[in-house]
Length: 416
RNA sequence: GGGCAGCUGGCCGAGUGGUCGAAGGCGCACGCCUGGAACGCGUGUGAGUGUUAAAGCUCCGAGAGUUCGAAUCUCUCGCUGUCCGCCA
Image (tube, rainbow, N blue to C red; front, side, top):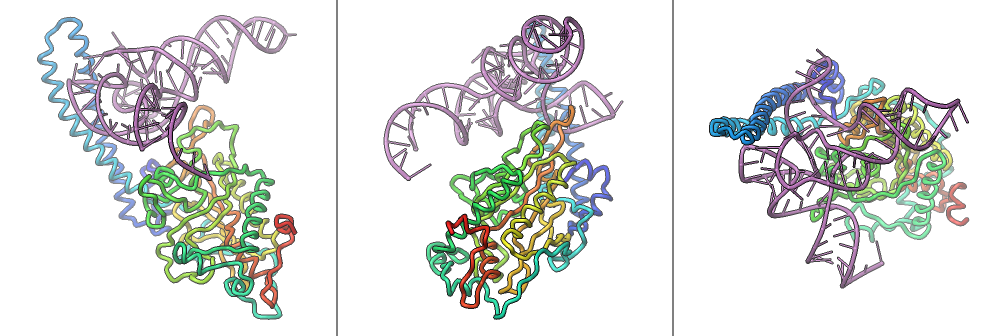
């Protein structure tokens, strides 16, 4: 959540940065106004309440001393009505401020370039040469038509569109990748975690999926739980409402989960293949750091994801997201895009973000710095999206006859 | 799914209508003591909001109610434990 004190203190500075993310100035002015209104409402209420408390206290004294309480009771009764009114006014003001404040995205870091959409993201670095083929490389679903790794029809039959089934070597490759990625990240100092894949609304508010993006989530109505869209949600919220001892920071975690997304609004995009599924698998990194540690840990996380791609010998590039492509909670983000010969372009396979204190403020994740409680920074990043890694392996390791080689580092994981 | 018990500060635990944000203990921090340590002694030690600082306000699982006044009484919900049933 936005630091409302900062907005109040430096309205021009904050709004200038948020305008880059297309947050309307009217909304920010409204926010500022509502914040001031709440402050006034609080002052009025607290004054009346203090009055009430004092009189109630007197009540006890009077009774003990046997004094007449008739007059006092009349005053207290009258004030009670006032207190109720002011309390309600404060509640309304608070609610109206909250609903607004929770829908404002994070302030983009100064390193984030301006831009409309993903076309204006800025390439940082290319890693590994793009392979050349003596034939026209196929897309992964065309390869699957030959080697049968993916069964699209039966996935749709038992669920609906955008669900699929991995078969035989395809399924084993997925399992090998998960284990490889977990081991790799673990060797880089990330603690392996296995977490719930259903979470409550509080957790989703903490990381910023709610209240704005409810349409993208699968919900289990009966129990008021949601299927997670990413392991970032359970992993980050592990520490919500906690004050972490300074010595434990930075906390670096890796977790493997399924992810569930409705993909509302992406109708017609990536309908072929398993690039965009309602259920997919992902190995996720989440870190919780002191503010002065987050940049270093961020670079760490980018290296982890990139080095996994390199270990798999998959050409890729690092891209700095522009303001138009930056997510709701992120202060800055680097995407990793893997080369897909079948599509003849780079496609996103990992996204690593520093949310700074945006999520910590929502989820109340703090640490004790000397005597003071300070918000931590939280970071998250895929390392990697498993389905898209399978796609990349299929397309980069394909032979003319539709066979696909298994990357060297995965062979031990497949008993080869 | 049904029965019973519970939910208080980092932890344990007292408090059953006012002077309670809350005794006592443990833990922790600092100081004294010591060659150094243990023991002992002393002081301090929840969060949020607010303020130059304070005062004030809010929080004893959550919400609602009774009352001038609720940690304390009533109701609803949640969670934890436990017994029974069911089950990977």
